Length: 600
Image (cartoon, rainbow, N blue to C red; front, side, top):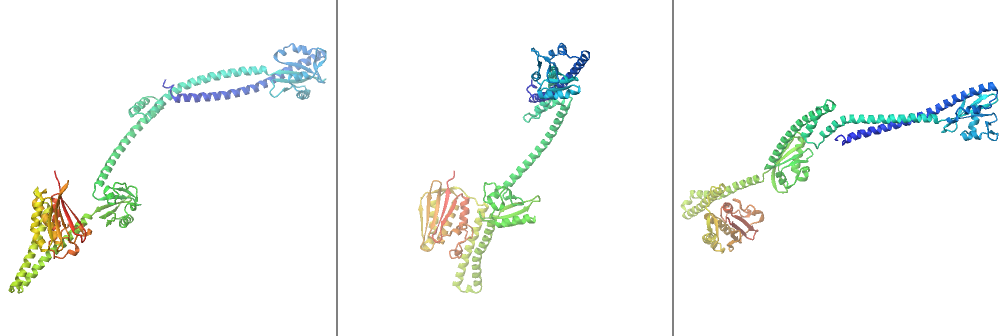
């Protein structure tokens, strides 16, 4: 049943049947044509021989009787008419040697009725004058043959009509027999082909099923094993496929293992590159980006975008960077440069390393904070040197003056000693402030968290600062809620409030005002110090909390101070989890707010 459902089986059988039908048709057409030609040729031979024998008999009768009378009746008795034949005696004047019922001789109309035209009759009579038998077919496709022979010197002729039907019937019987034999042979061949096809198509169908992609590996293997048990070429093919599958599976496992290792290595490498603090960009020889990690995208202000496939000049419009990359690609040697990315104002060091296979790797390291720290260190050293130099210079000058003889002048000696005392105190405060900052930055200073009343602390500081404010005729007031507690260190809060109020008094001109405001909202309690002083420009506000930083026009020492007050405030606020902010403008005073957020 599986074989009957096979398309291949029916296809082969159909093709065979079609070819057999075409071959048989051609054979039968050729056979029919050949039999038709043979039938006409045999008819011509039969008619010629018959007429020759009749002519001989007629001449013998003439020799005996010298008269042809009654010869037609004698021939008729031989049964020619029953065989579709007729014999006529034609006279030299064209009459037929047979009388009609009225005693008159027959004319050429009889011959015309038999199918021979007058023209062909005359041609035949002229050709037969030599005593031999000549013949003509009535028409091209006529089935009647006309034979003529001269039988006497006085121009008497014998005309024999011979029909093709006898030989045509024999040809038809032969053709029918050929048809029967061809049909039987075709059926036998189809049966044999079906048997042979069954033995060929069956295994081929199994091979086809085995190589189908939809087959599972186990079923494919089972089918091939079944076919490999045969003792024929199909078994060889099945064994070859089994061996090929074995080799293919081995290669596939090897490739899969390599792919897994490469993918694992690639994933690890990508993870490492993505986790790097430096920006990494890989480009080809045409400066087309092949890879860029997230840090590089962030530096180039393309956060969350895929830069693969884009040109380097599209994503980094920096001529120094482009020149460094092109020089490295051209010279095939590493190149480094430090530059500033104008988009986000960060300072980076760029290292371009060419790759032997082509392209280069760019490593961008953000050194903005490093350069900022270096600048702060230089400013710190400069500030410390400047702050220490002033009191030491004064102390040294006063000491030299006293040693040079000023001790004899009691008033001058007291004045110099008083300056030495003031500068020594200032130097001591500077050193104490620096030590406090160092402890705050290193985390060595311990803070006690306890409820602290901001109003009480601010009131104590203001009372201590009232003489200073009165000396400069500055109005110093405290407003806001009288019971406002924060969770912080008492001494740190006192230092913050003291430094802010002292700083406000220093930079507020005579006759100005300084106010301390306490307020509370849903998220925090705040201490706000406002003054009507000189104010701070926007460009200086970014660095005002740095140690020893002073506005350029205020570098004179008339106001006193160490330049560490606001820096200490910032570090203390950070230690207490408080926020400090500045709101100011040049010539319009300043407002500094310290917010103590609520904590659970």
